[in-house]
Amino acid sequence: SNKTLTVTAEPYSFEFIPNQCALLIIDMQRDFLEPDGFGAMLGNDVGQLRRTLGPNQKLLAAWRTCGLQVIHTREGHRSDLSDLPLTKKIRGRGKMCIGDVGPMGRILVRGEPGHDIVPELYPLPGEPIIDKCGKGAFYATDLDAILTNYNIKQLIVTGVTTEVCVSTTVREANDRGYECLVLEDCVGSYFEKFQVAALDMIKAQGGIFGWVSQSDKVLDVLK
Ligand code: C5J
Image 1 (tube, protein in one colour):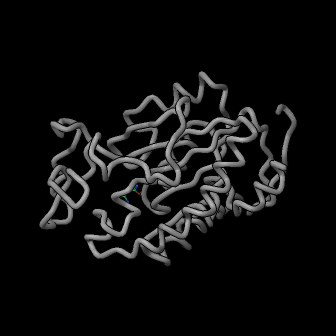
Image 2 (cartoon, protein in one colour; image 1 turned 90 degrees about the vertical axis):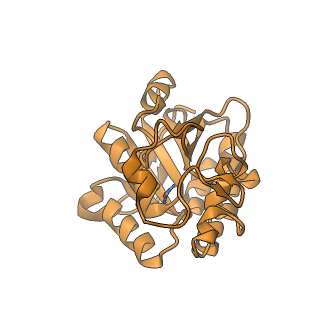
């Protein structure tokens, strides 16, 4: 639709034109969310991310029913790792690193089971998937071109993790002139204090990077 919808949000209402607004779902990948994935193997509490599955499923279903644009992202690398900076590969000094064989195939390598999107939120044909080698979804991808081609000017951003790939993408989007609404029940962090701080930073100073709300506030106006 072409008419403006108004969502209750912080620091003030988020107004959007549905056919100029995409739902951007960041990195809802099996290796980050599943109990036998890479994230869990590192000792992270995947429950903090899994709580976003239900709200994301409900929002995605409603968004699709309205015929609106959905875009998915995945963090990962080419199988030859030629797009993986050595600095990223060795970061953490862990036993396992990107490209090694983990519980669900090679860690963060495209085409491996653990790299793919969780079945609950699996993309439909016609929903672009952005494969990115960085944290931000704009860096070294065609996301900006796709948004321009679809006349998308605003983003409702969900996914994981709030302080890493969601935040980086929202900041990149902001600098490119997109307005972002982040839904707190649809974004997750392994660390509660980062979840709170990352969302506070987005909406601070009059919405310096965007708006924050909850999925039910969006569902309210889509009906
Ligand atoms: C994402 C990460 N997707 N935390 N990755 O946030 O490494």
